[in-house]
Image: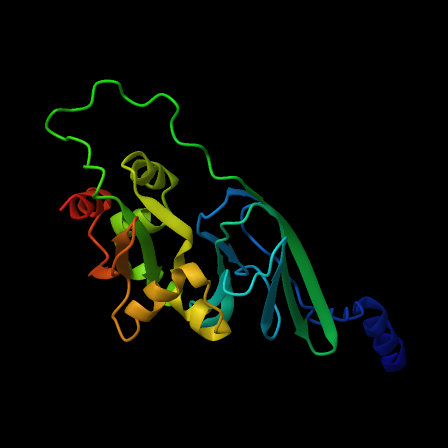
Length: 239
């Protein structure tokens, strides 16, 4: 009888299912279309693995156009990217767990910057006259991606807003190509476009973020702490 009960218990006990081994997962969350020059973020928050490696390829050398930083205590989870050059860019993320790799890609279509408004207001506000022709500025904004999230929403709009760029253009000012950039990315790659070199030199050892301006015709670079909002920037440029 004991033997029979023991055998019956074995038949009644289900076999323990073997748990599947952990596997890596590479997931990129980010845009697939944008306008040239706009600062974008791609994140790997939903990915799993040990270490995250990013890469960006495009129609031109992408060095200095992107930077990776940490989030929620996990390294290399966020990639910030901005390129003034239109074209197709491939964003790649790879990770691994044990001897198992995982890789994924996102294709970003970086479009042309829009033309200035072809139909400006024919009746400008008399209390807000246009700037005189000799008071036009070349503009560069330098920030650090690691502290970008600590800025106020209004300051982030100064850096990211396409509408604000149009306001600057309508006022006769010029944002230099690639002129809104992360200083850490420039320093890391040690590659500075010739047009930006005077501005990069002017902000060394300066607390960021900053707004740099120089006369459109020619002249020295002036450096200011990043103003509080878009209206403050325009007021400074008109001073």
